[in-house]
Length: 126
Image 1 (cartoon, rainbow, N blue to C red):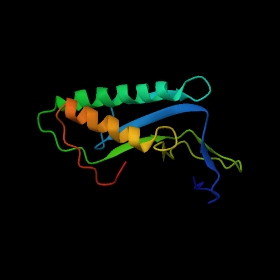
Image 2 (spheres, rainbow, N blue to C red):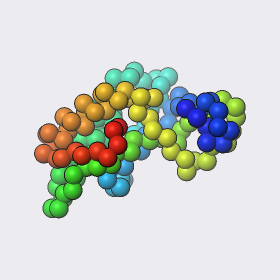
Image 3 (spheres, rainbow, N blue to C red):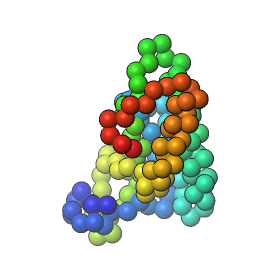
Image 4 (cartoon, rainbow, N blue to C red):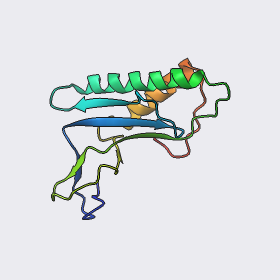
């Protein structure tokens, strides 16, 4: 990925960090999960992601006036530049295809949308 400071293709995900989930501009207090690439297998990270999506969809399905889900941000600020640039903590970058494959993200979203009877009409593909 490209570093927003030096503009080189030197940005990479750290070995551990936090993933934030923001859906339709809403974030639950528990809408984040930890990852550790050195201690967790990829299937465990995907399981944790799936659990957080399910928590959110269950919560969102209880709303009276639900709008279709149009925006899903799955991001982390735990990236580093190989050139040593200081990346502000306020910068968040997508973890899709970096930590969790896009096909699995879409599969989990579809499964949970069906389970909780929610509509997904994404403006941009995840």
